[in-house]
Image (tube, rainbow, N blue to C red; front, side, top):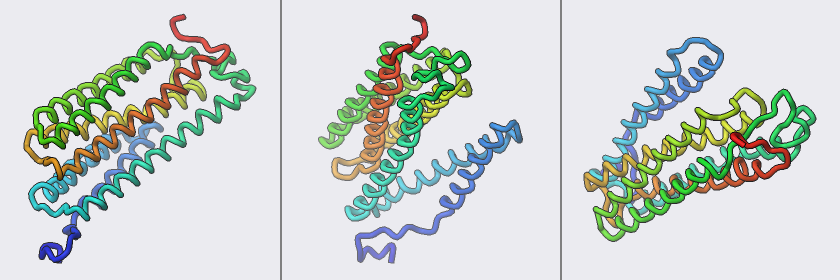
Length: 276
């Protein structure tokens, strides 16, 4: 029934990738716990390698279904859009947890924190980043990348392959630049992950966002390769649209991070800015 063409739905062939992906995720999570407790070090890299392999082969199969088998009909694409929408909604709730932790600590600072935000007690008092330095530059970079990926999309909709490729190249390079500046900021941070609630919430929120930037950059790089191979047409390119949606989501999350974790914290009474 999946191949007779008498209905618009796609009944996927049996695949080993879901169970392999589950094993890879379990190995990665378990390996991370072991790594944090100075236990067996080889489980984490093995789990990560399995995750990367699963992503490659599963992505390869989906691309083959969409581009060569032509089974992603308009009805199937609606289902894919719903799926991507729900995935991004789950990501919103994921970041909601980190913002909840941040606002719980910042709006209701405890006596152990000195009763202020950022903490000023001798035990966990911290210097913070100047929001108008690297964070502002990264904001400009990420917003610019949102413009370039939209430019690429408009080129694709018009059948302009060169605009599509140029826009994707710029977006991927801007994403890489953001990651490089974020890594530089981390290496020069005047606080650490285990130094108190400020460092913990800062690194958890910005670190997971940074991971999403890396994932989004890879997503767009795959789209760039597919653009060179003419996998996209003006009316059939959901793979690119999904990457663009994800990238815009990353942009919006960063605006919240910049506004509250960097700028708002810097304006609080008693905030000590690094280098000042």
